[in-house]
Length: 417
Image 1: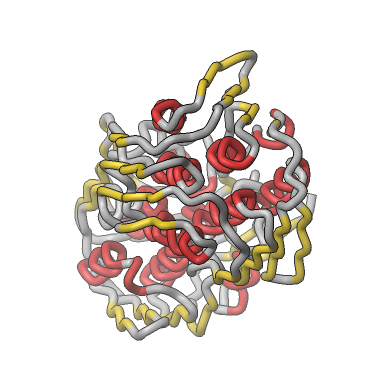
Image 2: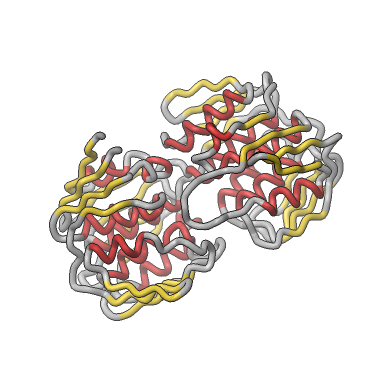
């Protein structure tokens, strides 16, 4: 497996272009299954999860043409309703094909998904909602087997505001007969982006981005062109990197309106944050102030930024408390940060961090996607060399992260297996 070596202690300066958002691109690529015309998507990030999704869509019968960050999908030949274990075991987002397959083919057989080891993240809310839309669902031998005589609109309440659950039900409802209301819907920008592309394809979705989404079913969807929104988590990671290294980094092609919670918390640490229309400049401060953080659904502080922010707090002055309310197993990176000298104590879903003068380079092991990013950040600020192993997690969600950091002045390189 590849690993990344970092010689820490360098101040980072310059501009970095933010890539398209993985968590927006995945459901949007899948949404092309709902149409029998060509859909063209731009600003698609070059990531392992994107490649896995393309392979899955081809397996289902779609034709795909890719050129750099442009992906064209023609699902007119959609003829396979099964997403097998070998294609979905590494990526939880594969479950998103359920809604479109039921809408187009009226049947789906999808392996129960995999992904990062950060908690159970059950799909029961997806299945419950699809059943309300008229799907007959059975779980057999590790697969979801779903059939329908025709999906019909329903009034659905989600016990938890699940992002992928909201997206799956939206895609199931757009071709359903009648009106569907999704209550306690997720409000994330990625949900809004999916609704936007579906509406461009001819769907009738109202109030995406609020807790109640209304979908009027239509008979069919046509093709469209759509640019993937910027990745707010990649942006947040580079913002923290600037504050960590006392640097001066300007993010371009980003969406500041999606980063309100991160911007607010960074300002409280003492970093100077300047926001433009599609730019954010972060200038680090010599002394980092301690700030408490509680992860919450959007527009709250994102769980996907918790690990990165913890690195910043590990060298801040005084004590800080980070509470994780979204996933029950998202402190796996703490043991690796402690190997680098961080003073962190875990109690239930909370981490108490006492800032230390410096972190020390060490060999560390990445456990999931965002933990990988946090260890890269720790290596950037640590004294000496840090070796981050199992970086295949990193490649699932960050495009050329070592190259981007290198252009900002970091001493970082990938060692191929």
